[in-house]
Structure formats: C-alpha cells, structure tokens
Length: 293
Image (cartoon, rainbow, N blue to C red; front, side):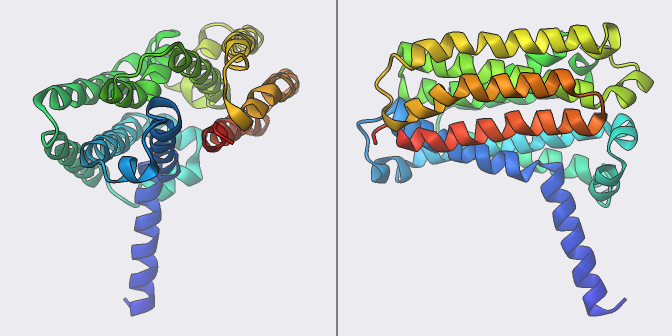
C-alpha cells in the first residue's frame, strides 16, 4: 500500500470516527454550555473567570466525552436499521469495526469517569447515571412506543442540568429556556422517526409513525412546536438584549417549518425539515452571546 493510500485510509477512519461520535453535535454542545454559563447561569462572571474555571472545564469535558460515547453505543444498536435508512453513512461509520467501536465507547466513558473524579464523588455518580441511562435508552427504550422520543430529548438537555447544578442558578428564565429547547429537540426527534420510517418498520421499532401513521405523527409534532410558543411568550418578557430578536423570529420561522412539514412526503423532505430545526437550535445557541447587547 502506498503512503498516499495509507494517508487516505487514515483520513477516512478519522471522518468515520467524527461521524460516529457526531462531532458537529459535540462541538455545538460544548459551545452551548460555555455560552449558557457565561450569559445565563453566571452573567456576573467575566469570560476569563469562566474559561479559567478548571472544575467547569472538567464538567464540560466529561459531558462531551459521555455524550460522544452515547452516540457510539446508539450507533452500535442501530446498525441494522441505519444500513437501510442511511447506507452511505453506514458504510462510512463501519470503516471502524463494531469491536473497535465498543473499545472507543469504553475509552470515552472511562476518560469521563477520570475527569469527573477531579470534581467530586457526586459528579462521578451523576455521570455514572448518565452513562447507564444512555445505554439503557440505546439498548431498550429506543424500541418503545412514544417513550423513546421523550427519553431522547431529556438525555440531550441533561448536560445543561449538570452545569445548572454547578452554578446553583434556578431562576425561572432557566426553566423557560430549558422547556423551549426540550420541545424543539422532541419535535426534531419525532421528525427523524418520519425520516427513518423504512428502517424502523423493518426492524420493528415502535415509533410514532410505525404505530400510528404519518398524519397523526405530524399532528403530534405540530403540538410540540406550537407548545414552544408558550416559553417564547415568557422569554420575550425578560431582559434578553438582542437575543429577543431570536425569539421574535421563532414563531414565524417555526410556523414555516410546520407548513413545510405538512407538505413533506419523502424521506428527503423530512430530512430538510429535521435540518431546519437543527439550524434553528444552532442559531439559538449562537444568539445567547447577544443577551447583553
């Protein structure tokens, strides 16, 4: 094998690993935790204080490692349906064997344990609970009717609960932000079930589209998105600086998403709908930096 072929294969394996751990999502998670800490949870603390806080850094690192491990184990259990729903992605991610995937899963969780132990035994226990819950979701809950979507959304916001406990800030505004994010993630997760209908049906996953039909599932997604307007109403009453524009635009943008959703009939259209919400969540994360502007 030539040197260029070897480099090419190494690069493909790196891309495979990045896809396995959902590298994009991990980057957004870390960014969101730092922005949330600086502008929402500890607004009186300057950036230097946040960035030089070793315990907070270890907490964020443990969250990122545990979440990355969670994506690997989720991918491990979903391999059969991913082969149907996303054949190209399946081929890329399985350049790394399932045995090696499990090794990476264990390494990431062990690293999270070691890092968490630098803070306190309570943090270690929190991440032990998080790891077990992710495994239980991937191996069992994901096949269960409706519970899988709620479970998935809760797992996505659990790292933010960790940093909320760290800063001991339990203001109502935190609850409004968390509710808004939870409902958006829940809607996105159910849309993914529409997108993955074929593989879920073949593998007998009891998702909403499989148990009911696409129309009822769309109605449930609509309810989730309309419910985001409730925390939005309370958030625009807060002193959020220029971030208010994000929430002002939330209603028309999400209304557009709903129109697009109801017109969608194909897997590609559902993928677009899913990505619209994903983009909106990213914009929301970035707009946190505008709270005091």
